[in-house]
Image (cartoon, rainbow, N blue to C red; front, side, top):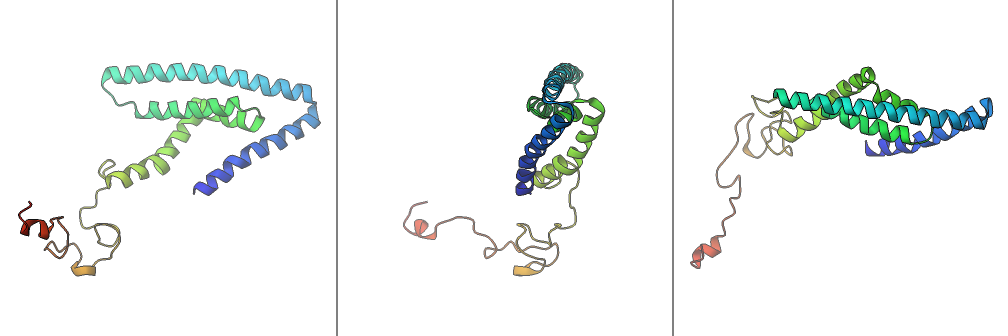
Length: 181
């Protein structure tokens, strides 16, 4: 997955540069430079306004006792939008505007929560944070650590061995014999 993301991050500036050359040959380099500067300035004004609005919403959510989860995600997307808008190019400016505008940012937020945030939290908490708790055994074939399968090493379905051969409690038998606890 990381290789794909790295390839995408390297592909965006390449496509942006090629598109700038294409646009410059069609409408002239002076108008192209003016267009890039104008989109960057307008985009930064939009990000600044949306950032202030998001901060106000976070403050009002905190004042009312609500958790501002969506607003914090919006703040992250506004940071990404600012980075895209500062990068010279028309494709990155378009992506920056998409991350900065509230309707499209809501779509990105929904997708990020479904495909990135919730799976990560489920992985870290075993499903307790999102409510996907497995009550009848474990989803990976019945092993606690995820390395075995059901029925291996004395495990049968949801039953696990807990005698002294199943785990190491970390006592040193030699230290006890010598009188060292």
